[in-house]
Image (cartoon, rainbow, N blue to C red; front, side, top):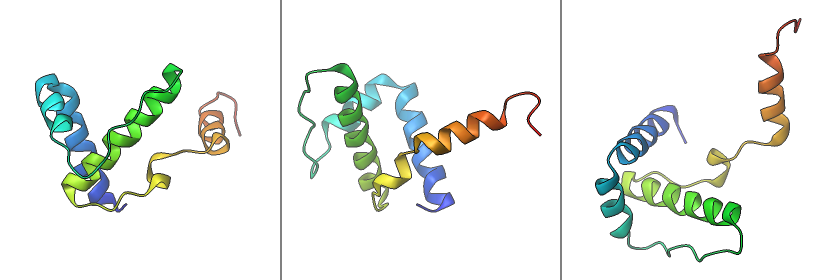
Length: 89
C-alpha cells in the first residue's frame, strides 16, 4: 500500500469510527466479501472482524488488500517499543 493509499484508508477508517450509524450502514452494505463467522473466543472474533473491515475499506477505495500492510511482527513491535525507553544509546 502506498503512502497516499494509506492516508485515504486511515481517513475513511477514522470517519467511520467517529460516526457509528455510517459505520453500521457501510459494513452492512458490503458485497463481494463474506461476513466473518463467529469464533469461540473474543480475540479471534476481533481479528476476523478487523480483517473483514480492512478488506471492505480497501475494496471500497479500490486499493489492493495485502495482509502484510495490516500486520506487525512481534520483533518489530519490540524494537519500536525499546527505542522509546530512556537511556537507550
